[in-house]
Image 1 (cartoon, rainbow, N blue to C red):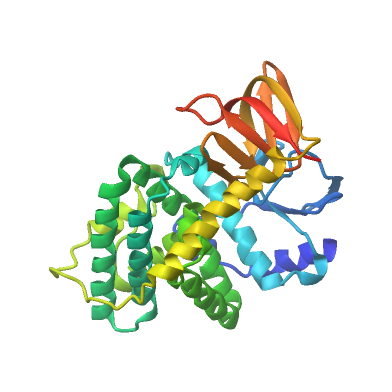
Image 2 (tube, rainbow, N blue to C red; image 1 turned 90 degrees about the vertical axis):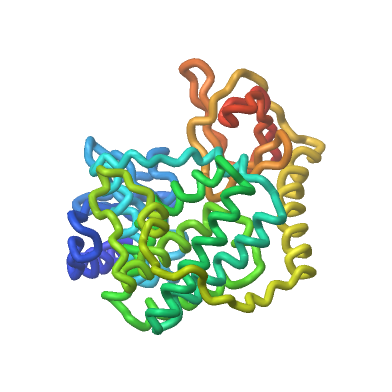
Length: 356
């Protein structure tokens, strides 16, 4: 682990952070596994402060952290770019960015088929805007992307704000991650953006998982904007949504180029059903266990894995969760289900069901 840390650190030293984003500065980082945490000048046993890949406050300083699952599989260039992603979240926090995301709003996202059909088309235009070298085509594709997105906004209404909030916060961080990778290895960068474009062009689980996809769409928007000369606000304290910068640009065209997006209704229906059934199955796999254990009380969810939670009706599946009742905090580090007790705030629950 120390060897990986040192190699990643040397890669990060090669990066001009201000070139990635105006005013962006490096922070300290840590790598950890199930047993130890490695930092710049020390090792400590892992504890509950180190959960997920993020930026945390550690000894009154911001610290980017990443969990290593398999030391043999670590690509140093890729790991350096991922650490820079988390460093950017620390930069967002220290810059007093006022855009916040309530991760539980994701669970209120409507399972509306018309919205998802338009979302598929929208992303195809975004990918084409990114891939083409023709600036005129790039402008036309991006204009069409905006037109479709505005149509979707009418369907999903207020929850649209969740999308543009997530796209701003995670899109910024993913853009600097990709720029870092490009500086360290052009070949690995090309492979990564090709993979991103493929994911966003298919009818698959990424179509329905708004949170995960927002990392990618936000990053592509920033990279496209730079090519088109669209000014993206670099002063994070102004808290400008990325989409506002993109949509207010004068494209000087009435309609974009029409694409044959190759939408397959049968494939869409199959993937939509698979997505919904997968959520149901995760929940049922816990609720239907003969030896499932139920904890009852008046709880507030205070810690969770936003990448691995999903809702169906009143049930929320979690890969892990911590809840607070009074002054007592209980951490459950295994899959469980919470039952919503407050339709306005899904963090409130009265029952938690755990499997083995």
